[in-house]
Length: 302
Ligand SMILES: [Zn+2]
Ligand SMILES: [Zn+2]
Ligand SMILES: [Zn+2]
Ligand SMILES: [Zn+2]
Figure 1: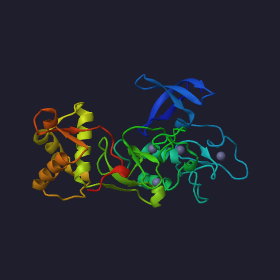
Figure 2: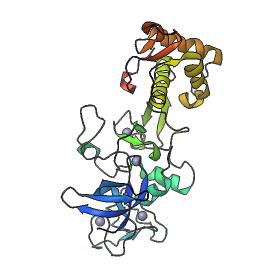
Figure 3: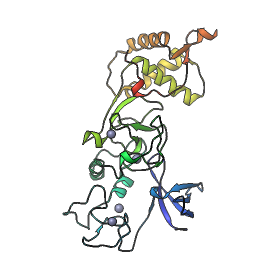
Figure 4: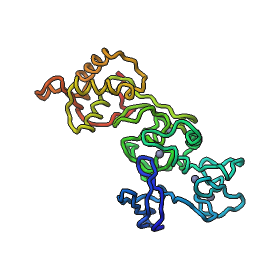
């Protein structure tokens, strides 16, 4: 209700501290003022109150009935069956930590914790989603859904720093994944599988293919520099060499001298790219024909 201090999940998957200014019961959302004084409407499902005192389950609002409530060490009370995953009978109320609190600690910009107790708890929680994936209503491109429900955290999207699972099609926040060794670049191409689909740790492979590498580099440069054309030696090749490991996650060991040849070849021969000579500029300039995000399904395998 109004005046409450809350944690609100943002589209990057992270929780931010705020204060409720207004409540819209019809649209099920609240106007939240954040610490930087910005104000945004946030859906109720993405708002978590800091603490609860009443003896009710924070999922279903009911008091303990047949089974006792389990207390999260850090926040509120749950029926074992209301939590995802179901709380084990041997869980004890002095040390058990709920999904929300595990995620609040483990999610990090650039990728979630990989080591320690919270990383292990998070990995376990991620084997099941706290919602029905099949009940979401998607747009035709399968980018956004009406429920604004994504990822393991059920938080909102959508931003460029999300990964799509190649098996189930759901999108996941970079901050909630534990498989990245380097943060994503804008427009990164990859093959990712979520923990629900692998029934274990996530898997990711970036694709060591030159056409797509060239596309990714130009896409990233054009978003960062807000220009269309880039010089091959000074910008494209130097950016590629500097970021070689993060671009390919160490999957490709193409020798440095071959990278230049392969990249130039791709830029000169593939329809995705325009060279400066086509617009009566220097021939060492290259740009993207159309600036779009490479999708795994559309990746050209040559
Ligand atoms: Zn998330
Ligand atoms: Zn309950
Ligand atoms: Zn908790
Ligand atoms: Zn999946």
